[in-house]
Image 1 (cartoon, rainbow, N blue to C red):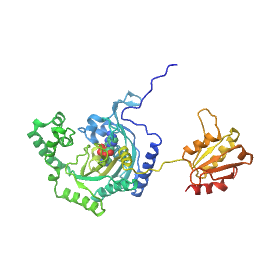
Image 2: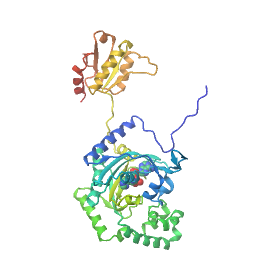
Image 3: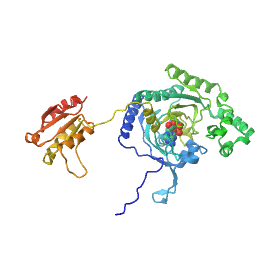
Image 4: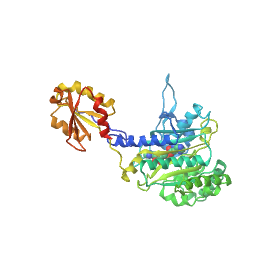
Length: 436
Ligand code: HAM
């Protein structure tokens, strides 16, 4: 018999399987709790958007838009208009679009968060994937340094709740468009004076987006980038005061940070505050969260002007860091495992298990690939391996008396008690109490 060739997942796109998926669920539950504590509400936007949204929002001359998007031309038929579509490489542009499209800021600001997959066609390596996941928070329609500070505090509270310690915060200020224009002119003059040292990418970006040259990954250009004029030196009094207020708020909350005058984010929509949370424990992909203020994005994508600030966390990186730091994540196991050595007991056993579940007891029923039940001994072995605290034994003896044996597998292992099969409510709560 011929076997068909196996089909593999796409490079850089990972399956998230048990038991690893339990770590994801634990992480997600802490995210939800933390967001709720800061009064952020969940938002879900499509994974596919018009390419134009990202080109206009993130910037035409960014690595993400130029090189990393999964894009395609949709068909022209009764369902589509030959549109150019892209899988979302990040979440901010989509959330901003949704806010504009649904007039979400009509009655005031919105604090929103999301959690989901993003797609970038980067070279896969540790901490860098082609499908990766972000948790993002966006405060739309809110101005003022206190909101920037709140956004940063939200991330630090999340690190605390997760038990993460090994992070540092870098802060920068990108000023306002006129300040950036003056800085940009100085940058172009500087790079033009050193044109012989520019690589091909930099030469191409010199006039389209010289700021991106500072973000170069080419080691041969690092020194040149480091000697370039600093945006911080072009900030006017208002931007400087804003930046100082953000820093004061963080100091007041005991949040340590360092100012990085060269903090260049990979997206063009930022102004004023930008920040990154970085760890040294993950090698080259050490940024676990990045964000900043983006007061011009909503206007850029066709909405009314509205201030905004946000960040996104790389979920894979944070989970990896949790492992590196040895943070213990609770491993889920059923409370009880149903041992059913005799097929005659199945109907009554199933009914009893349903009643137990309705009382909040997590029960795993014994099952096998060939429908055979196997011996009591082999089933008890499985019960033990499942991590359950109790085995529920539906044996012939028990059945004869319409009972089930509840056997402790962990604390006080071996202790057992018979309970009535038909009257689960009399003992389910007691069982649950022994579990907590
Ligand atoms: P970003 O810096 O491009 O910002 O991405 C945020 C985080 O996503 C990064 O710090 C990193 O942890 C993670 N990340 C990015 N690319 C990958 C990848 N290929 N594999 C694994 N993790 C990755 C944004 O996306 C902005 N939307 C953040 C934001 C929200 N700014 C304002 N609001």
